[in-house]
Amino acid sequence: MNAIADARSQRSQRTRAFGVLMIAGGVLAGITVVLPPAATNSDAAVIVLGAVALAVGVVLVLVRRDLGEWLLGAVAALGTILITVATYEGGGFDGAGTADNQMLYVWVCLFSVYCLSARNALVQIAIVGVAYGWLLAGQEVAAGDAATRWAVTMTALAVGGLLVARLRRSNERLVAELITKARIDPLTGVLNRHALEERAELEFARVRRKGGSVAILVADIDDFKTINDSLGHPAGDQVLRQVTAVLEAETRELDAVARVGGDEFAVMLPGVTASGARMIAERLRVEVRRTAGDMHLRLSLSIGIALGPPDGSSLDELWMAADRAMYMAKRSGGDAVGTAAELFAENSDEVTPEPVRT
Image (spheres, rainbow, N blue to C red):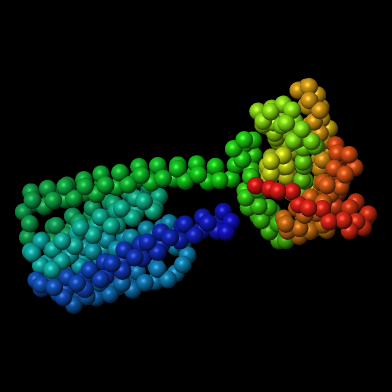
């Protein structure tokens, strides 16, 4: 599942979560009617309100998509109204079957704070405050007692909401960090293969919808094992960072640079022509060799190019074509650029094993 689908799935979960709360509220309404004591006003009204909550909850659970910020806010406000009227019909504070239903305001507030925007959550808490004030005013409760109950309840809801809001922000930061780490190569700081595949999926969807092209460059450092064996792994890591710096410096912001293996990189170039991709690849090759001279190293790249279309219509197809073209460049002695078109022109039937990628 790509990142967009993941985000949509996460947003739809809040709809189902509130649906579960509504179902639970409807079931509780039925339980309070069945169990003693009887409602002071109307058991029938409590049953109807519980049925409404149950029906809305089932719809929310089955809808399987996000209803949107303000529509969910409207449903939360409906939940507050159902809780308030059910509590009133049950007898409110007279010891009747729904005497403690106002505790369900906690569900509305916590859901709103955790799942809705800060502005929408404040609106929902304000609605609860007004509804609870109306409920207290309609009961035989002394004004001072009613004010105390309202203040204590709303303070508890506000403090609980604040704690949940802080927990939400902490979780969001943690998730953002984990997402970043899951998509970034820790050594070089560029994308990893998984992140490149996500970007490529979006890019190929754009090409299918609007036309155009996208090129994939696969670049491998020539004789990288020799560098590691002779100079040590710290020097090899520095080489990888230096090559990464060149790839990022010599490509556009809309291009995607990724490390896809030990010493293998890939670059996605949206909207380029075959000649444009060749020019970029040659520039990368020359610049890596030049910077290696500044480091007193012999360093070069073998680069393969594939352009979609015509070389492929998916990342896997282009990757395979560019990979084969890169091996063609290596067989020529390295420090070279090969293209899928040249490989096809040679009509080579040689099967080259794919490199191991992480």
